Image 1 (cartoon, helix red, strand yellow):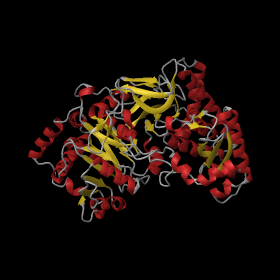
Image 2 (cartoon, rainbow, N blue to C red; image 1 turned 180 degrees about the vertical axis):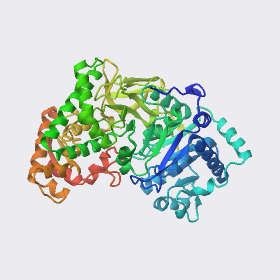
Image 3 (cartoon, one colour; image 1 turned 90 degrees about the horizontal axis):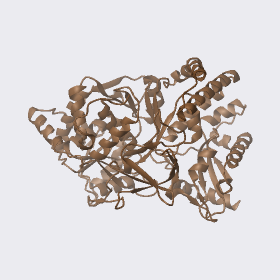
Image 4 (cartoon, rainbow, N blue to C red; image 1 turned 135 degrees about the vertical axis):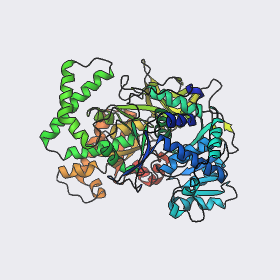
Length: 611
């Protein structure tokens, strides 16, 4: 069921604080926000919870504190904290003042922090603790940066700076309660709600200015395409600097009066899922890949008869998904077989991972490898792949449980138009598309053409039924010396279908053939090796083991057999060290930074061409 809660106004005329006022008045006793005691994400630690009424009281008190600090309507305030209550509540408090919260990725390098601070002209930043202060304190003395003061969430680390706890200590006296209401009621739908800086896969981050109208329409229209119980829990673990988590972890919960569970450490999300058994879960493709790899590693260690039973049940589940994908009724005999497979095989295993109650699972941000989609379909979990950008306030297209095509990213949401340019680039138009990029002087640089079409930078096609199929990013297409265009994501996802290969980068610009860097999956590889009696002591040793190399060679050969001549990998190098945000090869939203990988492994890549 989609949300049936009455809205306090037409969607295009709503502002976010109106939803919080409604929730406090009409759903005040329902849980709104929970986080673990100790905030270390430990499985089994207790949860602290605020109701919707308590959230609004805390937001009002915080808004008073930020106003006293000097925060004014329309100005940007930078936030660098993890998924903790101080972050979530501060975001709402600033919005109620008419200020504009801007979350900065916690993994940002000092030069990226300085760029955003300078570009946004922010006078205030709210940071988590000592680890963040090292990147922010030097900016207070930088004459080119407007930064005046820092607020620190961890009170013990605050030192000479203002502590977060001190902001709300005075509470909400009667006079401020009146001023608080007047402040948010001055906000208009065309006012900025947030600025999201893109994660910078190809250069300096750009500031994407999104209005209340952009976001409210996005939330309402996305909500219409989902099928969830009212007030469902959302496990919030992706960074708030990512548009997906801002929509799913802040804005949609306010629309739905839902319950947000904050998970401070993304590595603890599997434990949270086991404990909470959610009905919905969102993961970027890399998260679903990692979860699939973990399951495959467990399956590899099972006896043959158990693996055979699971594979048989998976075949039944995939057959059911196929009928639903085609819009066909599921034959009664197949439905009965599926019910038995769920009861006897799939649900008991899924329940151990906390995934047996899932009714809505989704992914976005990059093309989902089709083998990963099919893997989860074999467990009765149909991942609703979606597509959109920060510039479109989230999704433009989405699959839904009663209208999907595996491998596609779905159909456009209400109010969004798409067309394909002559070069294959996807153009988008609609009220959820942003007005433009923020300039350093505070003005906005329009990014759409005179007819409102925004060039998304993605390449794709629309089929006859209106489903969108992604190919790659326009800037990432490889042009060989023969003048052929190659989608690196297509080649990479094809070779990654072998479970041993966790990550891949294909290179070939200006060359006559493609080469690749392949990374062993750190979870699957040890289990695969152990099942074959290989006792290599480390990932590096596995990456050099003859049996592993033979299997990877077969994987590349199998992938090449499915690709055309131009797309085939001629030479490759197997690596053992996984790429991640901390080492710089992935963005904080787990997308591949191709330029960084090419620079880091330039010698290896050149060696593959010299071989």
